[in-house]
Image 1 (spheres, one colour):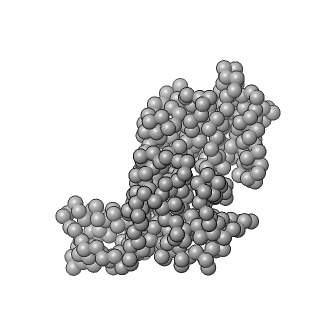
Image 2 (spheres, helix red, strand yellow):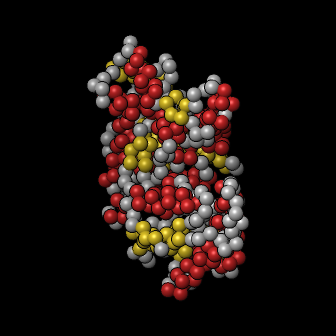
Image 3 (cartoon, one colour):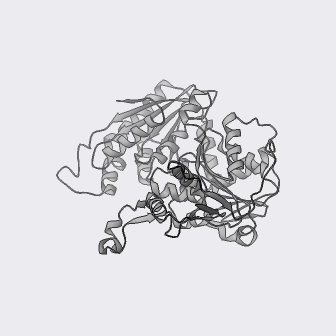
Length: 459
């Protein structure tokens, strides 16, 4: 067996057709809901996505997984690289003013030696510093770094230029463009750099790469850049479902997990969380008490957004915190604008509300007022606060939004775990909700906390 390895695509050559078909079946996964599509109902499609074609082609990022599976049957194929691999010298990623932790150095070495990887680093692990060290190591080449959101791009730009002293950094987003050989670009504005960076980029990096695993256009973006032999993604949370996981790793590379949040807590890099999940009964006036079937959206609105007793419990938690702490910083995450408005009305004029529609200047202004308030303060936020916002002063976090996604749960938890001199522990409040869909979602959040190694108390 021989495998020809290209930058984007590779191909298996073998006389053993049964082995190739077995591999193909191993890398075929059922698509949720496929049976309800016209092709699925008619039998024209078996409802699966195949990551290895009938001719043996596959995305190069899957090579480590395929080699691992072949090793189990004592098959060691000949590897033929169809491009010349670039090498760099060691110890070329030092950044003045920073000393990388051992796992940060390890992540840099993984990226440089493997040329491709999804680097999974939880909030507080110094993901941006790892990225900066890789940029420093690979300087002299054209580099493109893709972002899903403008505020993440601007934060990284400031860190690379102001904190790390890296030159020739450009940026490209909606209303802004500065040329640089190291180009930071939102995926929404990628068409503006195609002429300058598509063919010439040797290094492709993707921030919060888990967000690129499902969207067709986002995934197409990281499957592009035909000469980028260094392909590195960064995230705190890798998808757990087979299709998005293999799509992401196929485009970028095998996942390298640097630490868990518990590891970072135990090592003193993050604040220890105290997590409580509070049992919530259905509303006293349950609109679905005699209804057997209702949608998730209807359940969410009734049992979370407009649940008077649940919302009042959140207000009671805030009032209790305020009565026991003079300078608490309380973050409340919601998923719907209406839910945030309901809570802000109940809390009165003593809270700040940050929404996705707010521009960057307004976001930073709101955060400054929240942090500098002379008494305990509350910040309500939508998913804009889920990633990329560093508020180390947070002492209490209330997850008011529910949801089941491990990615959303871990990202939200990470907002509150940053170290700060004014806290030695952070208090997390979540809910064991009742009702169709929501009971299961609460249990999944509980399991996510436990899987991360945290203790959880159910009240």
